[in-house]
Amino acid sequence: MINIRNTLIIDIETVSATEEFEHLDERLKKQWERKVSFLKNENEHTVDELYFERAGLYAEFGKVICIGVGFFVKTKLGDMGLRIKAYSSDNEKELLLQFKELINDTLDGEDLILCAHNGKDFDFPYLCRRYLINGIDIPIALQISGKKPWEINHLDTMEMWKFGDRRNYASLDLLASLFSIESSKKEIDGSQVNRSYYVDNDLEKIADYCKQDVYVTANLYLRMNQLPVIPDKNVTFV
Image (cartoon, rainbow, N blue to C red; front, side, top):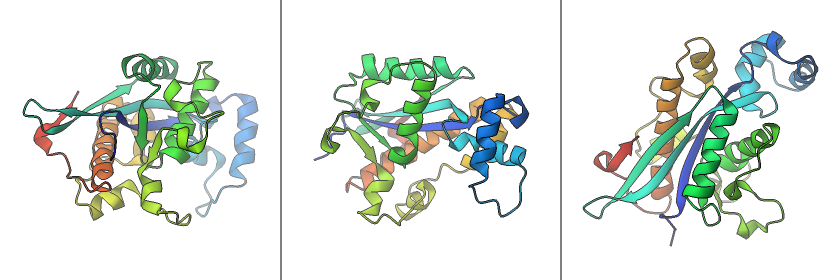
């Protein structure tokens, strides 16, 4: 049996720490130049172009601008429902503190189960690193130091789909297609977030996209546990 009541679905959106490579701290510039020397660069992009396109993928050179969360709830009729909210801000430290307050105080982080798609390789470690970089204690639900594997309440729908196959990678959009879940990739996708943030100045659109990713992940989690998807009438976007 899965613990729906204690499960929080999350998704984060990240961008490069600065709009342009030139605005980066001098020491970090050298570190980025060193890093890109190991990256595939088939299109022969410049260091500046690679920074704009890929820096947001790395917690050392990026920042979090949005955290989407999804709660499983009961409707007035007793059916399963989903409540989705996105926390977004240009101030990363304020955003991280908001999320910490939510999971530590509001949701009792000790027993909380966090679930994300590719969360164990991206969302969870990225958040932990950014908390430390911002001088904030890591929230209880994200702490893994000193814990045994079975004591860590982290779920990853990508890992669930691998079934032990380390070579397999399946995007959220692919699995949504397989399980007939409405896609979140309508107006933008992950590769366009940096441009939407720095060029279009559209944090609201990014937050909406993040909430849709939470919606897809939540329903994918249910389908992978042989449970029906939540009908749209039972989904509330805050």
